[in-house]
Length: 232
Ligand SMILES: C[S@@+](CC[C@H](N)C(=O)[O-])C[C@H]1O[C@@H](n2cnc3c(N)ncnc32)[C@H](O)[C@@H]1O
Image (cartoon, rainbow, N blue to C red):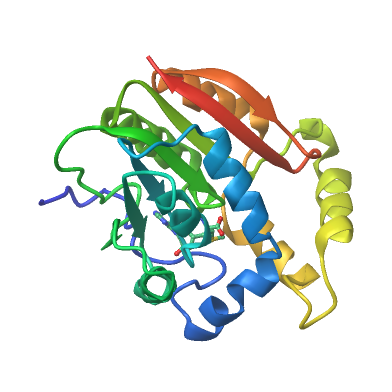
């Protein structure tokens, strides 16, 4: 589809380069999130054999594969071909045949066929500036059936705006690992400087304006948030 000159190029990586083979190979260890967490999420979303799930920014496919064990069909989308190749290899190893992998982003994916029952996006929406997050959420809204769910998990800040310096520095001190053991302080600094994580009050407004009702927001601390949203 042709796009205007001013349209954001979301196939381009910003911040950490997830098109880089070394980043992809190290991602699951760096991220440190266990398969069990993705199994809990897949169960909590109430996925069933008759349902289709869309995973935007699927990365190495850990969640997409767990979801494919309970959902009828999974569409796994990412801008990084290296991530998609890794995720497809994981699905093949697990003998899962109900996943489709597509190279596209929030702003370039074109949904064909019936709207999906559930869309999930974990740690990916922050790659877009806030204006384009609004566009992405409104596009997502169009791909989900009425009454369907959107689950968003991301780095989202809920410390007071004016206290940003303390909030960011405390977050990095809490989560950064020594070099080689996971994402480092330098990686988190790159995240804040070059990616587009935003405040919770901004993201809440964007989600609601896109046409979702926020059913719940769980925040493990003031730097992360999970949003469960209903398409109305
Ligand atoms: C931090 S990883 C998260 C991967 C996975 N969802 C997880 O929870 O582990 C971010 C992923 O988003 C992808 N990504 C970056 N920009 C994107 C965009 N505009 N649209 C979709 N995915 C994007 C990256 O290639 C990367 O695989």
